[in-house]
Image: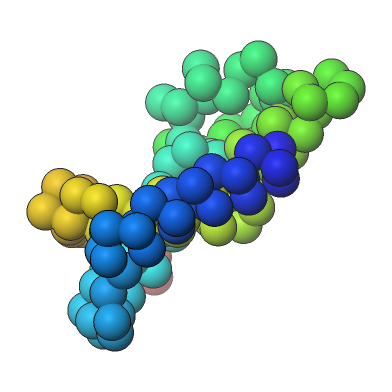
Length: 138
């Protein structure tokens, strides 16, 4: 998996350099949205109940973790287990998500900006839902 990641990043970076698409200096607002969107995308892929069907071949369900999330553990051996470890851990998945979104900013900035705004909005909404629930319980 690491070889796939490195080969993909190398190929995309080569194309970006050849076409002179790399930004000279990252914009702070894009970095903020990239960070928030990476957080949300990695949690959606790794923990969301709805995306569990995508993880099912690689993980075993343990229990509900609340707020639409599930707790799962990797299963199998070899590549199956490796993929299970990657896609069930938002911390492990975050660099992959950040890479995809970063190259999205390079090759398709308008579409990527649109999706990062959506993911950032959902993250803020999640925070507000949790804050509201906590305040309501007090």
